Amino acid sequence: MTENLQLFQLPHFSAASAEIFVLLMAAVTLVTELLFGKKHAGLSYWLVQCTLIISLFISWSQLGRPAVITFNGLYVADDIGNWLKIFIDITAFGSFFYARQYITDRHIPQPEYYLLGLLSVLGMMVLCSAHSLLMIYLGLETLSLPIYAMIALRRDFENALEAAIKYFVMGAIASGMLLYGMSLLYGATGSLDLENIAHHVALSHAQHSIILSFALVFLIAGVGFKLASVPFHMWAPDVYTGSPASVTLFLSTAPKLAAIGMAIRLLVFALPDIIVQWQPLLIILALLSTALGNVLAVVQTNIKRMLAYSAIGHMGYALFGLIAGTHDGYAFSLFYILVYSLMSLGAFGLVTLMSQKGLEAENIEDFKGLNARNPWLAFLMMIVMFSMAGIPPTAGFFAKLLVLKALVDAHFVWLAVFGLVMAVIGAYYYIRIVKIMYFDSPALDSRVTLGRGSSSLLSINVLSLLLLGFLPNLLVHACLLAFQG
Image 1 (cartoon, one colour):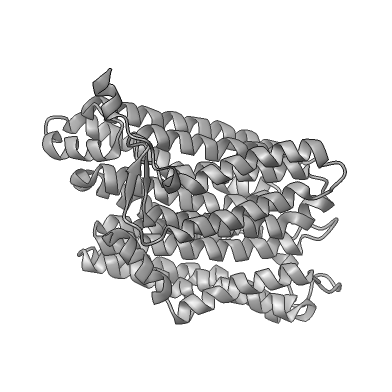
Image 2 (image 1 turned 180 degrees about the vertical axis):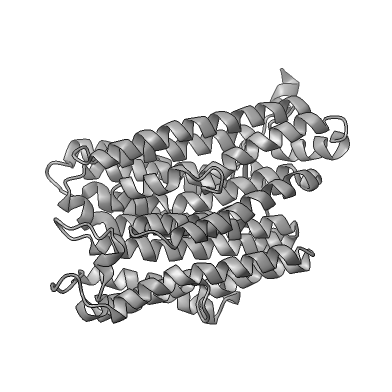
C-alpha cells in the first residue's frame, strides 16, 4: 500500500488546461442552452466561440515550455501539440463564423451544431497531445463521432444523410483497422505508452519484425483514412459534396491537423527505429495521393468535389516531410499542414459565404464573372488559389518548396521531381478558377454581398497567406524549434 502511494504522482493539470477548459465549457454550454436557449438566440454560438478564443490563448501561453509527460504517461504537453491546437482553434473559430448565416438560412439546429463541433475540437486536442495508444484511439473517436452527427443535422437534405452514413461506415472500418494495428503493436511491445513502445522496438524489433510489419499496415491504413490519402480516399469526394457546405468547411480544416498530429505521434515518436518499414508505405500513399488527387481534380465541375481531390493531393505533400525522416522534414510537414488549414479555411469559407439563402454555390460555373459581382471576393479567392497552386509570393509556395527541399536533403530527389511535376499539373485547375472569375461573363447578375464581420475575417484569413509568403520564417522557425525541443 505504501509503495503504491509513493508511486502515485499528482498529474500536471496545468499542462492539459486547454482540454480541461474546453470540456468544462462544453458542459456549461449544454446546460446554459437548456436553461436560457429559448430566450437568448445564438447563446451557444457565442459561448463556443469564446471557448475557442480562450483555449487558443491557453495553448499560446504554453509555447516554449519544456515538454511534460503527465497523467501517468497518457498525455504529453509540447510545442508540436500546442501549435496544432492553436491552429485547430483558429480554423474551428473561422469555420463557425463563416457558417453562422448558412446554418440560420437552412434551419440547421444551431445549439447542437456548435456543441458537436466543440466536442470534436476536444477530441482533436486530445489526439494532438496523446502519449499512449489508448489516448490516440480515445481522441480519434471523440473527434469523429460528433462529425457524423453534424453531417446528418440537415434532415431535409438527402445527400447529407447519405454522406453521414457513408462517412460513418468507412470511419468505423478505419477505426477497427487502427485498433487492430494497435493491438498487434501492444502484443509485440507489451506497452501502450509511446515512449515505452519506442524503447521496446529499438531493442527487439528484429525479433518481432513480422508482427510489427502487420501492425504498421493497419496503423497506416487508419492514418491514411483520416488524411484521405489514396487508396483510403474514396469517402472524401462524396462526403465533401454531400455534406452541407458548413460541415464541409469544418471537416476540411481542423481534422486534417489532428490527423497529421496522430501520424507524428505514431510514426515519429513511437516507431522511429523502424522507419525503413513505414517509409516505403508512406511513399506509396504520397505518390498515389499527389498523382490521383491532382489529375482527378482537373475534370471536376463541382467546386467542393474539386477541392476534395485537391485536399487528397495536398495530404500527399504533407506526407513528403515525414518521408524525409529528418527533424527538418518533420518540421516542414507540420508547417505545410498549418498553412494548408488556412488555405482550406479560406477556400471553403468563401464557398460557404457565397451560398446565400436559396442558392448553393457548389458548381464552378457559379464563380463565373465573380470579379464583376464583387472584385474584393474575387481577389481573395485568387490569392487562395495561387497559394494552393504553390505560386509565389504566397505561403503555399514556401510550404511546397520546403517539403520538396526536405526530400532532396534526404536523397529522395526522384520523389521531389515527381512532386514538382504534380504541382505543375495541379496549378492548372487552380488557375482555371481564376480565369473563370476574371474573364468569363457572370452566370448571375446579382451582386455578391457579405456582412462586414464575415468580409473582415475572410480578408484577414486570406491575407495571412500573403504575410506568411513574405515572412515564412515567422512560422517555419517555430516549427523547427518544436521538433528540436
